[in-house]
Image (spheres, rainbow, N blue to C red):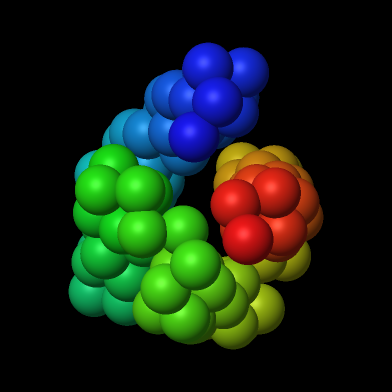
Length: 107
Protein backbone atom coordinates (compact mmCIF):
# COMPACT_ATOMS: atom_id res chain seq x y z
CA UNK A 1 0.00 0.00 0.00
CA UNK A 2 1.38 3.42 -0.88
CA UNK A 3 2.00 5.98 1.85
CA UNK A 4 -0.79 8.18 0.44
CA UNK A 5 -3.29 5.33 0.64
CA UNK A 6 -2.01 4.43 4.10
CA UNK A 7 -2.55 8.00 5.34
CA UNK A 8 -5.99 8.06 3.76
CA UNK A 9 -6.87 4.80 5.49
CA UNK A 10 -5.62 6.07 8.86
CA UNK A 11 -7.68 9.25 8.52
CA UNK A 12 -10.70 7.24 7.44
CA UNK A 13 -10.24 4.80 10.32
CA UNK A 14 -10.10 7.68 12.81
CA UNK A 15 -13.30 9.15 11.35
CA UNK A 16 -14.97 5.74 11.70
CA UNK A 17 -13.82 5.44 15.34
CA UNK A 18 -15.19 8.91 16.05
CA UNK A 19 -18.50 7.81 14.56
CA UNK A 20 -18.49 4.73 16.80
CA UNK A 21 -17.92 6.95 19.82
CA UNK A 22 -20.89 9.11 18.80
CA UNK A 23 -23.10 6.04 18.44
CA UNK A 24 -22.00 4.74 21.84
CA UNK A 25 -22.64 8.10 23.50
CA UNK A 26 -26.07 8.34 21.89
CA UNK A 27 -26.94 4.82 23.06
CA UNK A 28 -26.16 5.91 26.65
CA UNK A 29 -27.96 9.24 26.57
CA UNK A 30 -31.08 8.58 24.52
CA UNK A 31 -34.23 7.88 26.52
CA UNK A 32 -36.17 5.94 23.88
CA UNK A 33 -35.73 2.24 24.69
CA UNK A 34 -36.27 1.01 21.13
CA UNK A 35 -33.61 3.35 19.73
CA UNK A 36 -31.26 2.49 22.60
CA UNK A 37 -31.71 -1.26 22.00
CA UNK A 38 -31.17 -1.03 18.24
CA UNK A 39 -28.05 1.05 18.74
CA UNK A 40 -26.53 -1.05 21.50
CA UNK A 41 -27.56 -4.53 20.34
CA UNK A 42 -27.40 -4.25 16.57
CA UNK A 43 -25.70 -1.18 15.14
CA UNK A 44 -22.73 -0.84 17.49
CA UNK A 45 -21.70 -4.55 17.47
CA UNK A 46 -21.88 -4.67 13.67
CA UNK A 47 -19.91 -1.45 13.44
CA UNK A 48 -17.21 -2.83 15.75
CA UNK A 49 -16.88 -5.83 13.42
CA UNK A 50 -16.59 -3.44 10.48
CA UNK A 51 -13.88 -1.46 12.27
CA UNK A 52 -11.95 -4.64 13.03
CA UNK A 53 -11.68 -5.42 9.33
CA UNK A 54 -10.53 -1.85 8.66
CA UNK A 55 -7.89 -2.03 11.38
CA UNK A 56 -6.36 -5.21 9.99
CA UNK A 57 -6.60 -3.73 6.49
CA UNK A 58 -8.84 -6.48 5.12
CA UNK A 59 -10.66 -3.97 2.97
CA UNK A 60 -11.48 -6.32 0.14
CA UNK A 61 -13.04 -8.87 2.45
CA UNK A 62 -16.78 -9.03 1.70
CA UNK A 63 -17.60 -8.78 5.42
CA UNK A 64 -16.37 -5.16 5.48
CA UNK A 65 -19.27 -4.01 3.37
CA UNK A 66 -21.64 -6.58 4.90
CA UNK A 67 -21.29 -5.27 8.47
CA UNK A 68 -21.64 -1.64 7.43
CA UNK A 69 -24.67 -2.48 5.30
CA UNK A 70 -26.26 -4.17 8.33
CA UNK A 71 -25.69 -0.99 10.37
CA UNK A 72 -27.35 1.15 7.74
CA UNK A 73 -30.22 -1.31 7.42
CA UNK A 74 -30.84 -1.13 11.18
CA UNK A 75 -30.63 2.67 11.06
CA UNK A 76 -33.61 2.71 8.70
CA UNK A 77 -35.77 1.86 11.74
CA UNK A 78 -34.55 4.76 13.89
CA UNK A 79 -33.06 7.36 11.55
CA UNK A 80 -35.96 9.77 11.77
CA UNK A 81 -36.39 9.56 15.54
CA UNK A 82 -34.57 12.87 16.14
CA UNK A 83 -31.80 15.08 14.74
CA UNK A 84 -29.04 13.07 16.41
CA UNK A 85 -30.12 9.80 14.82
CA UNK A 86 -30.55 11.50 11.44
CA UNK A 87 -27.04 12.97 11.61
CA UNK A 88 -25.54 9.68 12.72
CA UNK A 89 -27.34 7.86 9.91
CA UNK A 90 -25.86 10.36 7.48
CA UNK A 91 -22.36 9.70 8.85
CA UNK A 92 -22.80 5.96 8.41
CA UNK A 93 -23.91 6.50 4.81
CA UNK A 94 -20.85 8.68 4.13
CA UNK A 95 -18.64 5.96 5.61
CA UNK A 96 -20.27 3.50 3.23
CA UNK A 97 -19.42 5.73 0.26
CA UNK A 98 -15.84 6.13 1.45
CA UNK A 99 -15.52 2.40 2.08
CA UNK A 100 -16.55 1.75 -1.49
CA UNK A 101 -13.94 4.23 -2.74
CA UNK A 102 -11.18 2.79 -0.58
CA UNK A 103 -11.91 -0.82 -1.54
CA UNK A 104 -11.81 0.14 -5.21
CA UNK A 105 -8.38 1.76 -4.73
CA UNK A 106 -7.15 -1.34 -2.87
CA UNK A 107 -8.03 -3.76 -5.67
